[in-house]
Amino acid sequence: MISATVGGITFSSDPVIRFGITSFDGWRGSPPVKTQLQDRANSDGMFGVSKFLRGARPITLAGRYTGTGEDAETYDQYDALAALLADGAPTTLTVTDPGGTASAQVILYGDGSTLTQLVNGLADYVITFVAPDPVKYGPAKTYSTGLSTAGGGLEYNLFAGGAGGTLFYGALGALGRVSVVNTGHADVWPVFSITGGLDSGFFIQWLETGQVLRYDRVVPLGTFVQLDSRTGEVLIDGVSDSSTYLTRDEWFAIPAKGSATLQLNAIGGSTGLPLMTVSSWDGSW
Image 1: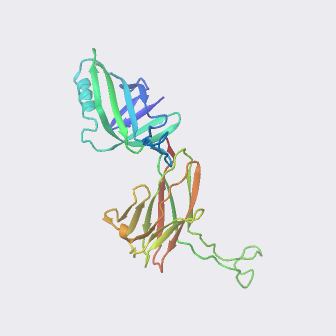
Image 2: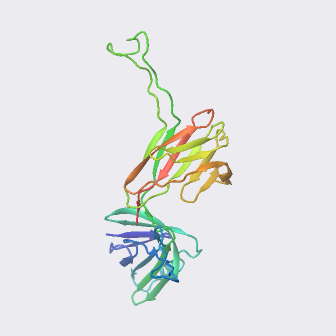
Image 3: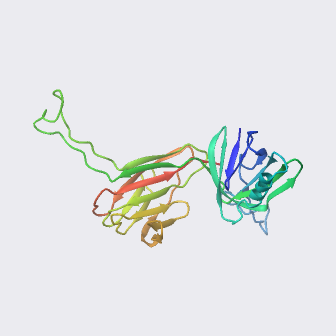
């Protein structure tokens, strides 16, 4: 079974759902490749490129509305379909099929949503979307860590803190690290949220590659800084642009079928319990 929800309407291959699905093109499979090559004017062939990138993902959802007859509810559903994404803003399309649940931001495209009215409350519909970001994302996953902290050492008297005559080495320390995992087939770009207090800022390091995101400005208690790896956006409290204080911007993606070990580090001192929260997803083409 397959179901798709967008704009408050659910479409499904389940016969109980009135908006039935008969075809769903573009959701599975590769998005188009942007192949813009330039001819060589004075020799054979074309100029080469370092790599081809992916274009937006076109999606066409088609099926039949199965009403109970020529009643007011049926016509209200016709109007609901006509009003789907009427404001023109991107909206989340969430799809569940035997492969799992994934979502994409979509807008209406081309003919938008069309409906062919039949008889006895039946109607055929076709809806055309485009997803500017062609990657499909699984449910959000969050990881969090504070700053690294030192652990204890061997305490004297040697058996004073132990149980049953064992040695006691004090409290465990913390590395200030998280391992972010992407089990999908497409690279994904994480979003970071760092809370204060950090006297002179912070830096995030991908330990396997050495890439760094460094923010050189105080982060007071009660304030957070958000860094979006995909857009390069840096915001204070989700509102004010603060990208000018990002002095190293070695942005990175979590690789397909891979992981990244990330560490939060303070620049200067800290107060309270600073925290880094990483939001990521499994990505698929």
